[in-house]
Amino acid sequence: MRFMMMVIPKGYEAAAPDAVPSAEAVAKMMEYNKSLQKAGVLLALDGLLPPSTGARVAYTDGKATVTDGPFAEAKEIIGGGYWIIQVRSREEAIEWAKRAPMSNHEMIEVRQIFETADFPADVQKAAEGFNDLANAAAGKA
Amino acid sequence: MSDIHRTIEAVWKIESTRLIAGIARVTRDIGIAEELAQDALVAALEQWPDQGVPEKPAAWLMTAAKRRALDSLRRVRMLEIKHGEIERELEFQQQRLGEAMDQALDQVIDDDVLRLIFTACHPVLAVEGRVALTLRLACGLTTAEIARAFLVPEKTLGQRIFRAKKTLSEAHIPFETPRGDELRKRVESVLSVVYLIFNEGYTATSGEEWMRAELCDEALRLARMLAELLPEESGVHGLQALMELQASRTAARRGSTGEAVLLSEQNRSLWDYAQIQRGMAALHRAQKLGGGAHSYALQASIAACHARAKTAAETDWERIVLLYDALLQVSPSPIVALNRAVAVGMASGPAYGPAAGLHALDAIAAEPALANYHLLPSVRGDLLVKLGRYGEAREELQRAIAMTENRREHELLSRKLEQIPRVRQDV
Image 1 (cartoon, chains in turn blue, red):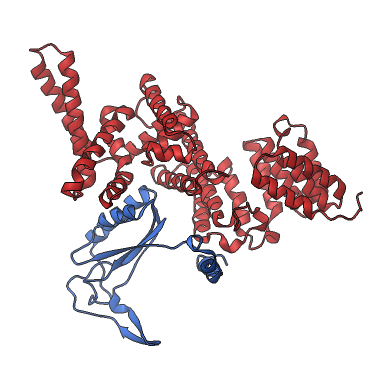
Image 2: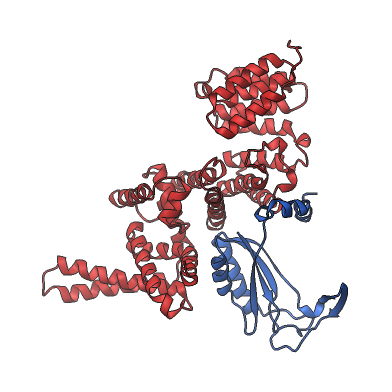
């Protein structure tokens, strides 16, 4: 099973657009990333810029509303990113998330990635072409 | 199973390999190390449901294992040493063991894990023993899980593991990473175990499908682990490439009713292209390290030719023939020669095509290893169809059908037989 572990920005919304984490924090994170790789579970990972550079698009009654970052009061400034891991159970994904070197107020959301093969036939039919899209993104072309 | 038990199981799956490897550095015996680790797991199962999962579960388990090691040392010494001498001797031994365990507890090094895998795959063991021990020690699978995956009774599997541990102990196999020429040979032994695990899952035609697929995942995880532990070994990357590329086709290999779908007829949009990319990257690493001509890397290169083709018709069969030629050099086998003949039949160019393929088949038809192999007449039938020799093709396919007992193969060949045109234009 594949899971995405997403760092939910809870404390770093107000970080300056050019804010970068400290070398020490990055070193700790690299050590963690390495442990995922050594365990053979890491499939992909990326770090994200602070949300102050981003935007949120919210939908109400079919209408999209855009909010530019920063979004809220903030205390801490580090972090942001995601991992995709392949493990044997939801609990294992959670255990890996618990080992991440996160700072105060940060949060990791653990979500399983769906496999089209898990769906019943009619949903699979409706999702036909999904793999094409995913594959094009992964560089088939 | 309750939530806490599932959590303990997950912690075990994550930590057990390093735990056993760390203890084995002290005990120098992976059988004893595994028993101590199991004792620690039992302690966790007793205590964590009440106390909760400790903040540092790995350290907790190591401490529990240490306590058990000291206990058993005390018991053994009590029996062995005469009263009077006991005290100081025992104290000294306990202190040494305690210190060694503390050190192991502080830092399980990657080399410990590597030593564990090398020992589990030691050539002194029967192949099935290597496979079982590796899944047990390096993947953290339970005996029941391994038994289910290999469709053998749990008791049989348990005995297999017991025998393997006993053999290692009796043969005084050192807990170490081999060096020099020995390293190359032992790496091959490890890789063959990993590929065997993969194939057990990949070629599964029966059993609990989900568990079988899980064997492929375990093999891939082992390969990714090894790629980190032995980054300079090109063979590791070649095998990872091969398995990633093969596994990328998993979703397309079965039709809606579970029937096997041939490579040429697979819906290529069901292939996992992120996985293909991982395979290509691993293949590139293998080639950069000078391992492009290794058997696994060559097979991966062939799989890569298929992965690169957007449709079956775009397959670069000429290149595949060359790769099979190279593969025949490093690991000659009638099966490889048979596959080469298929590629010759598919390729275009003056030296290729169905007639040339048939010629290549004739050259290996007398191979005793292929005498009862249904793919020989099946391939011959395909080539004869292409040449318009339908009558002969029909005979070959009927022969192939008679040779296989596998239901899925049977269906596939019967479908082919039905598709042969009924017109009489045999040459």
